[in-house]
Amino acid sequence: MSVAPHLTSGVPDGTEGIAGVISDTRKTLDTGNRVVTQDSYHTPPATWIAGTGYGSTPTNFYRKTTGYDSKGRVIHSVDWTGTIRDFTFDGRDRMTATKIGTNDTTSPNMIQDMGFQYDGGGIGNGNLTKSSTFTSATASLDTLNQYDFRDRRTQVQVPDGVITVSTLDNFGRETKNQVYAGSVGSANLRAQFQTVFDEKGQIYHTTSFNVDPSNGTVRDSLTTNRWSNARGLQIKSMGPNKEPPPRMSSSPRIIGERPRSRRREICQSHGRRTIRGGNSLPNGMTPPTVRLLSGTTGPITIRPSPGPPRRQLRGRRESL
Image (tube, rainbow, N blue to C red; front, side, top):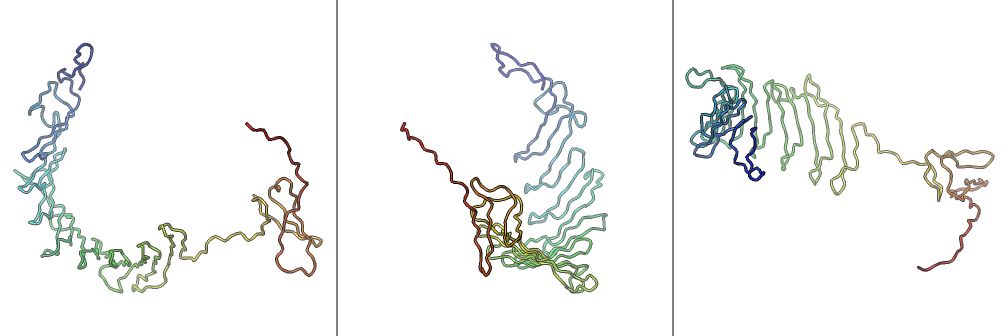
């Protein structure tokens, strides 16, 4: 609101009246402390009152309404625009249908937009086996689910007829994924993937198979391997092309030499071998040169030639 504060000895005391309200939100609760109406004011009346009757909809505010059944479930809602949604539940508190419209009393125009079926319409563990999106009063797009004896979903069929079958291990992890067209059968197989886990539950082997769409024959495959350390961090991987890990440099190393920015070159001339290139050697060192002796076999250790003697600093030690 926008109003001048009431002052006592020059200090606001909060006793000023409510006036000049710019925006307001009000909620109405039922005896169960549940919100039944929520009013959002866009043009509050000039005179503010604490009780009901403060303005009208839609002149001053928009109202959102929520209705409950005897078990406290939301079965009716009206949003700010006046769109109504009704919800239907079965005896086990599972939602079975939803309807949408703008009038559900005098001249009802509610139509069903969603439907849900559990355990194939029979008795079971409460698994959702069918969900429908209605495009008209008699036509719907259905998604079908199947479960194993542990209530884990193992098959899904979407409205366009594509079926996905999952093979799960004892821990509920998917080890094989197969995609079929129309119905489950070897001739209808369209894609296949396989995943292998290690003893820590980490993926270390994945395979993607090439499937012939004309007859469902499984042909070649692409495999990716992963290696992890004891902390579960990936330290190595190898893709389908079997690409090797990076190779280490095999160039000779001079004992006592600093790392160089350029590649060392080896040249042979007049019976001598000289290693040179890159940055300069440390102070007091000269480029190494070795002479190849005839009849010499085995590895040769290359050491830099010593430089001029360093001048030693002499002085007195003074104690503090």
